[in-house]
Length: 134
Image 1: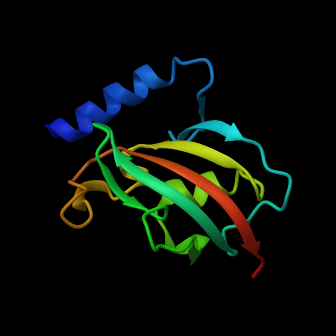
Image 2: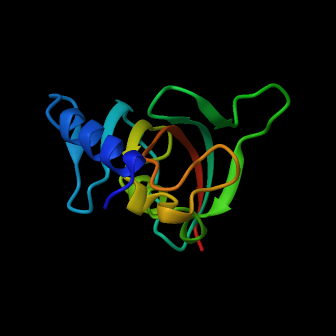
């Protein structure tokens, strides 16, 4: 039997997909383009520098590079959740997207830390600042 979090995420994403500005990929990732970029698009083997804010479906923020004293995050794109790896490859430097990530493209049945439970769908606003080609 599916968990309540999985059912909630599926219902949210089904409703969200009906909105005119939401684009859905074959994998189930959904996104909205908040600002187009004009620079390079990363490949999954590249390293990216981003600002981001992550929230649960209920709006609770669990992480943000915008917090006081934090620097933009830098990481290899092939070492993050699948939703980020896929979504960031759709962006160009300077772009800002909002991602709606189903649990199977996020942390799945294991969740992450104390804030992200098993089967949670997540929302991220991500600003792609720089691509370092591998």
